[in-house]
Image 1: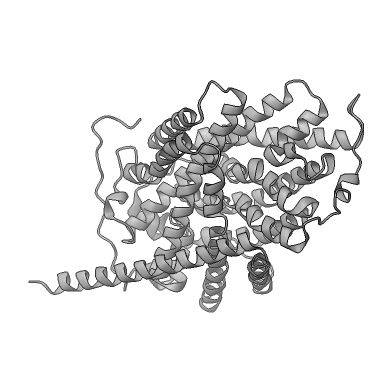
Image 2: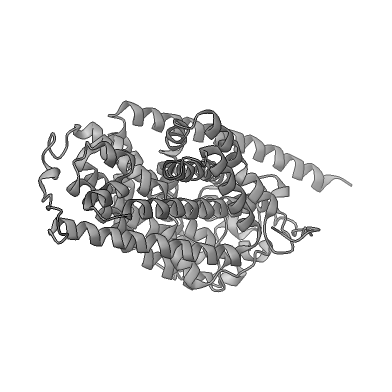
Length: 494
């Protein structure tokens, strides 16, 4: 835990909007002089190797280990189509996000870019929506990890395990970014190593290299109702689950602000992560739907364990279950870090209560950490009351928020890139094929939304998310107007 006798470090006064580079869209190529770095006093103790491994590991969590099975149930083998579409899209989006983050590495990330491109209300809306997503995902990760541990060791009740996880990872985040970064590094090493082993075993199964286990061949890709047994509607339903699976990679741009050389390190992390994530996701799902029938109940509940059980490796299913629990806790840890830094950034810019911008002597936004983790402790109670249904509820609550965030990234990149080109600004990391690939990403994302409307459940999620986003925007607009009137009255007071 943090040192006893917490010392809060007061922040400097907020820069007036008329001269704030974030508002005017100006940015300096010197990462040590951008506004977020000057005013925040966050410690730059995260090492480049930690950032790179975090970028590889932060998206490998509930979405891949649990959500992939639900996606296969919805779309059958055609879930591969959804993963390929989402993979291509996420490559473009992360490159666009990297272009903006390399210029302006900030703990506010997407919300800062939205503020620069579209104004204060847009920045606050994106920030609160993103924070709400992370806020709920933290609870989902704890619930999924506790559920798997309970299945392995029934004596450990699901709610008690969730409570232990929440307390432990809250403590880690209160110790400082250096400790957090090292923990995430080894979490990511374990996750990535386990997936590589899984891919090797899967290929060995298909090539008939495992004695006593006949190769399933490729018949499972077209039998049991065909490649697309549930039609386009099934693929549409699976797309939201797949999009959620890729959600989380954006956190690397938040973490970059706490590295010694953020301009250089964010570019390295973005370049490193893209093709490896696609290999892990698409490769893993291809193994799943090829080795086992898509309608297998085991595949729906725990796809990684189901494949290893089929391979007949003694103890492999238990080992993988332990790895999955560790991976989920890693994602929880990363999401809590991202949520706390995002809330800190919004408070620093006046879009959240100022108390969340206070730092401890260890340069930790303690109140932002505690505020971001609070719903995770509420989820402990939900796990006690509804242990079998709470995870499904949590996953459904955030499935389509990623679509709004990705839309914001694309729109902001287009605006800021056109602005930078007009002024001749140097960009350390440039988007490929601009503006054509940026518009391609926007078109694909629009297609995902249209396709999702063909499925009732997906349509309801999209509509609900749009309504929530609109409500947040109205609230932020009203709050911003009141804040501006208060500042005006203060400035004219004797």
